[in-house]
Length: 384
Image (tube, rainbow, N blue to C red; front, side, top):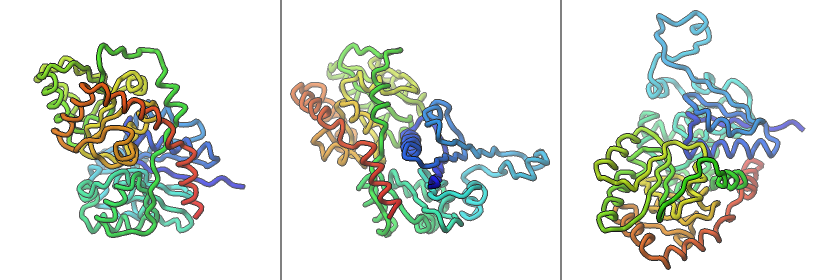
């Protein structure tokens, strides 16, 4: 029997949460005897690409901006460049044109894994035999409109993608509310490579050593989404009250230097910036509490990884938190505000009984969503 060919279309492949989920899915599909291709059309990161199973084919169709007058004849013949910034390129061209431009082979399953750009490209598919699927990690209408041009254009894109996979019940509810569509929408939580995560968590090379009660956060430094400024505001207030703790921040991004400067301004010597780490699991595993301070999330990859490692967690009330932590039974969920973060962190640091309670609950929760359960659910959708 011929293997089914699966395409994952992504706008980038860097060390972000959605990118890691994509790599996990690609590897899991490959292990279930699918022929898997990841097609990336902007930029990538060799660290995350190195995590792909050797059976997964990786293709980059990145076309840089070039001056048409200076382009070589080969570039002109192959149209191996673009003359517009990416956001304008996406708005100017039709979904059908973009699909033909980037998807150059026949696939049985076409997946827009994240990003409005990928969703638009798949919505223009001319492959009537393929199943089209679009992953919705969180509802970001403002971002969709910014990328696609208007609400009507975004609505048309989502209408033309047959199956929408929402990574949390909350994401589904938000999608239905925004676009009014309620057919062929499925909830499938993100998978994790449990064995690999636990193995990496035990790595001893450059192992971080904590000196006192230690908090940890792993995410891309995008302040408007991840809430770093309010997190540092809370840390400043807790330190002024004499609470002793250390906070490890793992990752990089556009606001990395801004947040480092704010920490210096606040004289927060207990904040340690580790930068981007190929193996963040050893940091999570060696900390006392994982903290999600985000304004918005999908079904957070790093929160799932924290659960797998049995590390206690505190999270703002973002999409996916209630499902992962069973409405606060297995981790502390706080109001999505600076005040909520402050009260929650203060309680976890100062109330030993509360912390011990969630430490035991975190261990109970370690195996609640295995990759086999997730893949079985997804294959049931694929097979109808």
